[in-house]
Length: 167
Image (cartoon, rainbow, N blue to C red; front, side, top):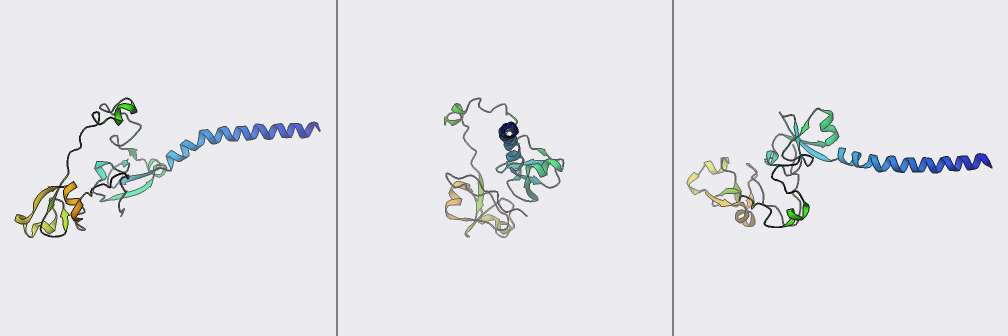
């Protein structure tokens, strides 16, 4: 009977130990399995939405653990662990509209077709006088993004930005 109690006690201690290890280990595993994006010819990885990888050219998606094992470092501008000097200190002040800076409107170029383009798109080179600058918010509502130059797209309201197509 004494052996049974000792074994039961060991099992409860083992279960407690496994629960503590699991609680400490899970955030590390979840952070390491976060998807990040590496831009070729650099030693940095980025999070989705970073301006550096906005064109999505020459990028590779991988987990953060894979990126760190290859020696890549997080990009300081999109790394949540790095506090930015202009960032608000409390979450309450971040939700107020006055605390957030007004985003700069993105400009795209349109012609008489059904697409909007980047400034240096080859489709605009055929007739440069027909091209005119327009804000992305206006052009994105009625035109499609050019499949050749792949300009930025207008974000949908209430959704997070997509990762895009990775080559």
